[in-house]
Length: 192
Image (cartoon, rainbow, N blue to C red; front, side):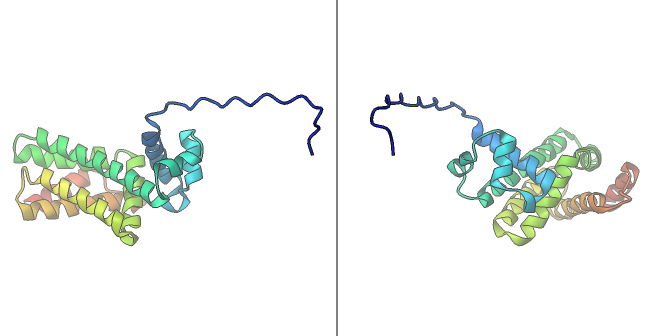
C-alpha cells in the first residue's frame, strides 16, 4: 500500500523512439551471421536480436515468424550469389571467357568465402524440408541458369549449374576438397 503523505513521484520520462530505418536489414544480416555460426537449428529470435543489438521485440515487429526471417535471409544470400553469377558471366565476351568465368566462380567466389559456403549448405539442408525455402533455391537456380544461358544452350546451362552445385557441395563436405586445378579440369572435361 502506498503512503498517502509521500510526495508524488514525478512521471518517468519516456525514452524517445530511436529512428532506425535500417533495423530490418540489420536483423536480416544478423540472421545470416547467426545461421553461419549456429546453423538453422541454432538460430533464434533472441540470438538475432542480440547480434543486431536491438530489443527482442523488434523481431516480432518486423517479422511474423522465425521462418519468415529465414526465408528473407536465405533469399538475400541467394540473390547475392546470383548477382556474382550475373557479373561473372555478363563480363565474358565469348564461350572461352565464359568457361574461365565458371571456373573462377567456383574456385574464387563460391569456395572463397566460408561464410557463403556454410550459408549455401544450410540453405540446401533447410530447403530439403521446407517448401518455402525450396522456392528460394528454385529461384536461385533459375537465375543462375539464365546467366549461364548467355553462353551455353539451355540443356548445357542446366547440367553445368548442377555440376557447379556438386563441386561446391563436394568441396564443402570433403576433408580433401578439390584444388582449383581439379575444378578447372572438371569444368573443361564437362564442356568438351
